[in-house]
Length: 152
Image 1 (cartoon, rainbow, N blue to C red):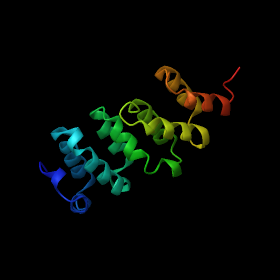
Image 2: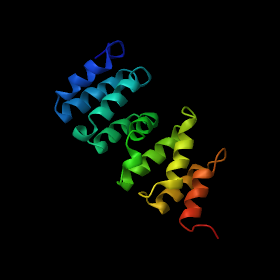
Image 3: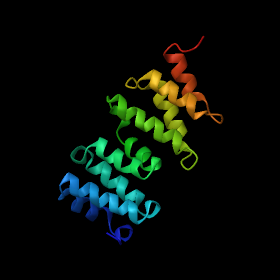
């Protein structure tokens, strides 16, 4: 797996599809250990392809072990629009805010989720956004507070 960045993503996805979920997560973890920056795109693409088999919870925990919020963001944006799991929607919001310095469009996506998504815990999101102290773009917090009556 040391040469994964030089391999075709389709071949890697097929290989990972043949592994058990535990083996696959272990291999993805090794890829991240070998270099988050070099392997992040590959890991995210494999995670998106096999999300159901590997489970979102296990994949997010793997990214969190590396404090790789960019990985969580790119992984969760692939399905969060249709997601009804409040915890997964929150993970996408959290990751988008935490990686917004390196992924400028992330805060726009977080704003969109806060503005229109129906499946998140507004109190949890409001508290997180308050703690995040969004000085550059407070719109996600404004939308949550306006939509759910947190405005005095």
